Length: 301
Image 1 (cartoon, rainbow, N blue to C red):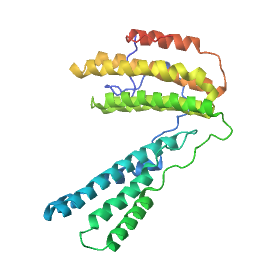
Image 2 (cartoon, rainbow, N blue to C red):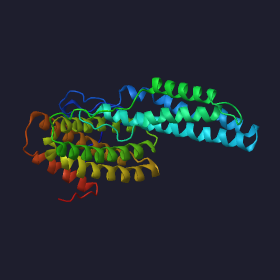
Image 3 (tube, helix red, strand yellow):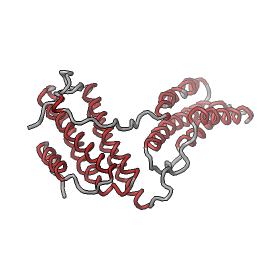
Image 4 (cartoon, rainbow, N blue to C red):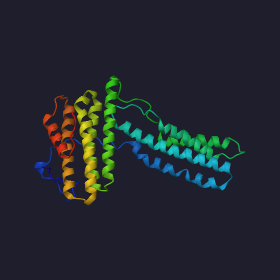
């Protein structure tokens, strides 16, 4: 039977009994404390920069309007590229082993910013000096504000490229499952539940770190990164559907118990990986299988 979750994230806000509390382990690294994340606010503010050009577009002839609207489009694209580039850089910095982003979005964002300002400052019949000056200053200031994209692979020296590619694909797929779970919980608007989900995901990402540090660990962790996270994602979707109807505390307690089981199993597997033990944690795997089966998830294989 599922144990009611009684930690600080529960509705009661009480601590669980000491006898039930799992042994403490070193806190996993927080993947959300990196510099690029702090620049996200400036990237979002960049979406406001085209507003003056949009307003000015309707104060002249059709050619004037076309230039201003083209400037608006270029600046919006620049803001979008910058934001996506910052997200890619955050993911790159969070991993010990990573390939550089395939597209240097922030650099392209700098170029698009320069183009947008040049178009915004260009008037028919005028010279090119001012537009070129705007382009150079805009691109330079954007580059200084946000910096370049990562331009080199990280942590791949001496590692087999086939193995690291397998790890990268597995981690990317697992990250998509975590993102789906985060979005599902976010829509419920429950802050404590969102914090509980974030704590679980930090433990999962600790496993990502263990696998990336030694790609040979992927075989032992693949079921966790694939089958069990997929099952957790599906269980989260079903929980959100039920809980959104009437906020039933029993449904919340059952789901919190599932997160507890997942936490313990992921933590145990990660500690085993870090210790270099390649034997399967048969008991923990079977417990997790049974729990997922009770949630209606029946993994294949």
